[in-house]
Length: 127
Image 1 (cartoon, rainbow, N blue to C red):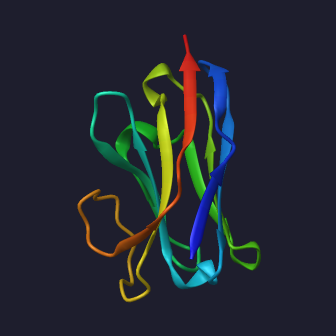
Image 2: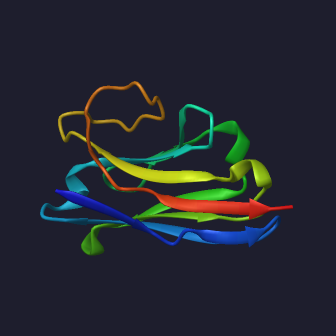
Image 3: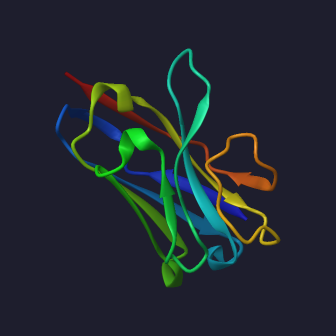
């Protein structure tokens, strides 16, 4: 399975972007999906994740109330709607799919089972 992110770009603080993560080669509904990000000089952190059916999701505290994760399983796509963006949201954003044997999604960058990653999309927020 291949994952491809899109939707990144440059915005001013307070702006919005919607990231997409589209799978090819295998149906995405079998996988939970996590959005990670990595800022320059920092480690990778999990931002949000969504269950296989889209009914459950998790967020890190810094994006709660601003970001919304969703998925369109017939389109094999997971979205991350990012609102009220802040300069500290600047990072490369990656989506990752967790092996179908794991029933729950995870924000832990060290969690097992993440065998499929996209190439990343840059998000830059200026003040």
